[in-house]
Length: 577
Image 1: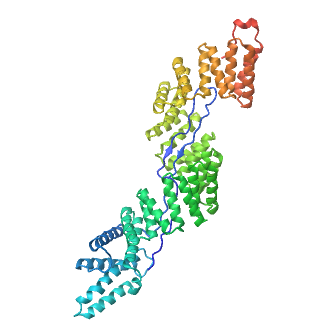
Image 2: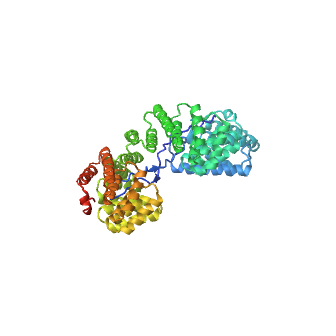
């Protein structure tokens, strides 16, 4: 009987378990202008290989029996060197007869049963033996030989001649293939590979066996061997879209994204409505930074299947990488509508909302993510950042503590916990966390900067000056560090040195309103009134553009003082702070 080809079945690309890259937000504290730094968190999408489906799940004892049959047949072939006409021992004959009896009970007349090829093979082994050897033993009792032949035909419910249309090797190959098929789905992957090994050895052009063995080897993490099998399957049948698709999945796993893209494209040529090929083509392109093209492919997947949860998720993730956070939210809304238990969708929607400064709704998403997966440290970290932004400092600290407890030993989590502790008056604990952040990440400019802010606030001026300087050394274009170091120098009475730092901050960031204002204050302190007035005017213009009303009011008051200033007042310095 003919063997049916296993068809590919596309698995979800949703990662499990998740791997997150915990670099979300570096935040600074105690500063005139927020330090604008935000980096996305990345979950590495683990792509599962497609595999055939089996509609029936068998009992554990059935898989155990099938494993024993596989071992017995392999040993049988090893002893005899082939599966043709064999003179069986009494024990071998009895064993084959017992196997056949079990198969007849299971398969019956169902030619499409997964074990039908195995039953055909066992019948052939028994029939070959009986035709070659049984007559010699029954010459005195011919009626027994006739009765035995009729019984074999009757039990199989089909003419023996149909079975003999295939060679012994081909029949054996299909038998081992059917065993491998079922053992794979019984999670006996290593045994399934052994069965496929026999199938390909017996029938070297058996492309279905190479293809299925490739899937099994992928699951067994034998990636090089799986690649060889997919290559062979394609060599033997270059029109099989699923082989290209699965080889593309494997290449993606091996980070050969260019090769994966070529295979997904080939799968689409052969099967233009291959939704998963478009989906994974988009993923591979996104890995190479081809985000716009990736979005087009994911849109095609959605066009072909408007309810494709993973395509919405992957398109949302790709837009996240592009910084299109509102578009990300729109796609993840649809993902969650289709799959309310999708942890990653809540996680990234919360991250996108956080990056849009929608902290409260971000917290709602992180709450749901934590409910779905309570042991993911990054969810607590992100929720802690959102709570810190809303001023819920103790709750934020609790979340940061939980993230660290769950193993998130990142500089960012210590920096954010330090910020929260510093703002809540826990000075020593905050300093310890900043120091730990620097220990984990020695070139972490934000940690030196924030520690400098805290030290300056508490009168540790020398330490603050060292930290600001180190932040600038690590990040030479760090405008905020120049600005705050300038303010510290002015506070210490070094106005000329402060002018240099303020000027450098403005060179780096020309629209830095606070730096213009403080430059004016430093110049006013040096009685350079006209220059100070000019700096204040520039600062006022920027403050109005930026809707910074507090700074606007402050500058207007200082300008009023300057306008009332006379040379006779030179001994009485301006009340600038």
